[in-house]
Length: 134
Image (tube, rainbow, N blue to C red; front, side):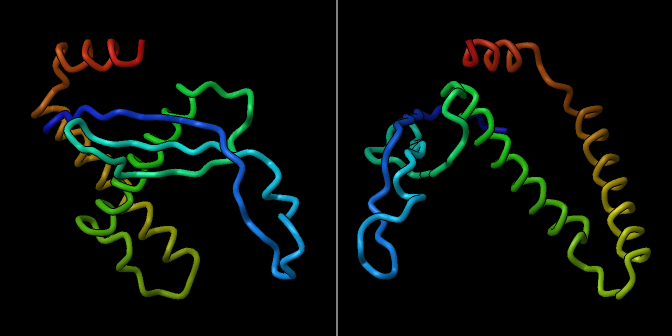
């Protein structure tokens, strides 16, 4: 697993959106939103962008954590679909779908447990992650 270093910038912006009647900004466009830009070291421009309407009282660190959780969730979802067949169910009943999802999630729990057993997290990686958070 390769650890990549990235830079993140977060700014509050107002979107310039016009309504369908073209009579000025819509009410939703008047509210400021957070724009998060992320780019890897060595890149001259940001590579990922997120617009969010998270609460104003949230810290920038909290916003970055939530965004990273979202990317982690998407990665896990793609793994569940690609490796374990989450998207292979073709039945018509809720009971069948529920059984299928339960089996897939149990398989995923086994896969994660095996990964941790064979590749336990190192103290160096945890210390580096803790240093980045601080």
